[in-house]
Image (cartoon, rainbow, N blue to C red; front, top):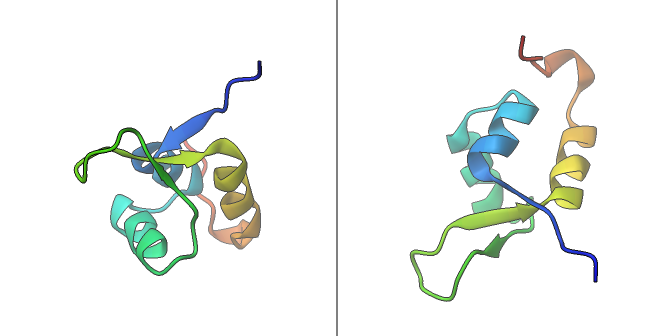
Length: 68
């Protein structure tokens, strides 16, 4: 069985060259689909890798900051 892969808010922010706050704002506005890593209200937010790749692919290419 294929296991689904996820990234955290912080990982998506780093890959997208945006701040954690921007990613959280996009999640709150419904622009990014996410899941929770558990059933409690305080469970960590995780983003399916496919969704993270979709978000990154839609960003303007000139604004992406590549990490060294």
